[in-house]
Image (cartoon, one colour):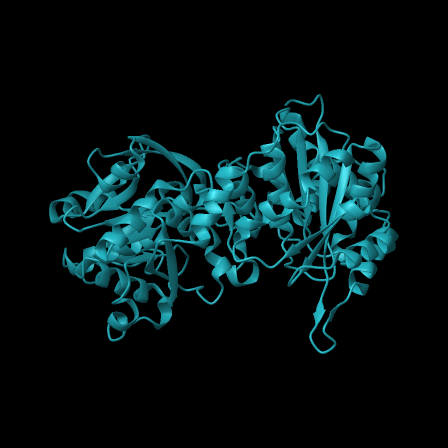
Length: 538
């Protein structure tokens, strides 16, 4: 289905943060895709950082990277995993980006003689960014998730911009979905609708009337309660749906479909219902997630393990890979700072596989190297991603090549054996934001390698986020000793994949395969890794 111009859906949140606006947005997109519409999702983030690239993962969770090299909010990962539709720089907009652009224009003299204000200049720029995706002329519906909670000071310009857009675009061109919380008070044994009423009231004070309410609750709500919410919030009774706690986020689209949320939205947008949605493959996927035939224990070794969202794409890639192998991947988070040669056997000895996670800086490095040494010598399937691959190179240089002081110049710029070195184009770069090697780059795989067997093709493209690379001055020495370059960038010679052929399954990738795993297309490398781990247990 191709519309002459796109329709817009805005998703806002109230009462509390972290209710799942990103999952609701992704679920709506998936349902509309099933009806034949082309859909994309963007995120408006109210923080003043230009992007989350310089944020500590404990502050904001994972930094997700798009094909075109944007460092973005982790919700864009949800969007891609649910829709299999790649996102771009235009899909994540922050207050920082908005103000940076407006101030740059002011300095260039574009507002000469004018007082630059939040209204109209900031709101005009927000509206321009919201409609930027429409210029690609490939989307029927553009879903825009507004970060934060209605009533937050920092969200007000975004809400005002949406109000203006609704007025300017006209009736039936936009719809507003408001996600809110219905708390359950155990002491009185009842749900309370008052917080939702106040949340909608705040939205109304800012000039926005929601078309659809999604009520987040611990368990199912009575029909009369939903009718009460509809009455007090000026919303049609059929436009109040519930989002209860479910074992898997991938159940949410099916939950929304059962309540006909997609039909309600299409009616609001005055659009035809399109194809009868076939969600059978999605339902099969969910069944495999909920009812696996077997379980495999995998260790995720990193330094942000207290917050699983720091590794969100890796976690979800294991979910997808588990369905490929009819198993549940039980992840064990192992803090690399606390991992030592004395306790490594206790922590990792019963694991089917070991993944060493990406990251930056020297903290926890020795624990990662200890984990890799254990995986290599005990023949446990291993996957190292980005810094995880670099640590595998360091471990091999120290314990096989005999270069006891080998390390990365990121950790020690004066090392005599810099087996991992700063990329040539990164030398002289001092700015932190958006200056790494980012986005998708090609890689040529060696036929017969583990990685080639996983992908089933010689030419691949994967996303990157790094400043340091394997030092090719040591390549011959590594290959002579048994660690092979199984994947190389065809243009620069950058080593993208290292393997140890004599090991049951030992792979390190400079790229981030987790960024491209989706429900529809689970990543083949994660699938092969999980399969190797299952084999290791038998």
